[in-house]
Length: 166
Image (cartoon, rainbow, N blue to C red; front, side):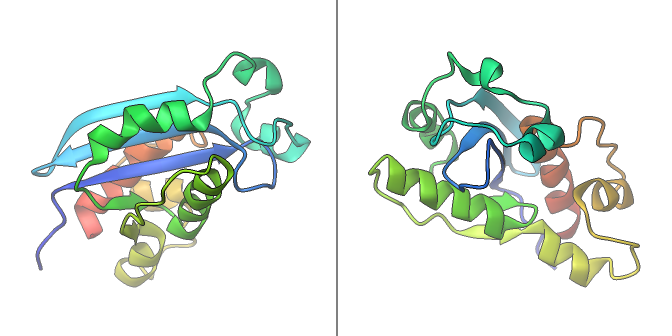
């Protein structure tokens, strides 16, 4: 089985239930099976308000992102890092829908990145697990996730999982 050796694991956190309300992004670029680069940024969400539930999950508030750059500025930094790479996410439907919503809101071209899902892969490869949440799957793959719901920590865990089961 050919393992995926070149990809970018990505994770978004959102401020509210609007998929475009990305408030942070974490990215891990893997080349030839090794972490080649990481990137993290806070982002001014659009629309710019936080629900209690979202803040409860990731701990970010309006104060944290008040002076953060907007999505399109951050994406300009990410684009060259991921050129030619497929994207990998845990529950990629969520992260892909966030990306597409942000592209729409900022009227940016959607390059339609190929996405691979470590959640779906884990359900197939590790059916015995009690659940397939990121920290559970990461642990089963020998990776200790200490800061769950911090976008970069989650992207690092996702990359570790992808290297094992994708």
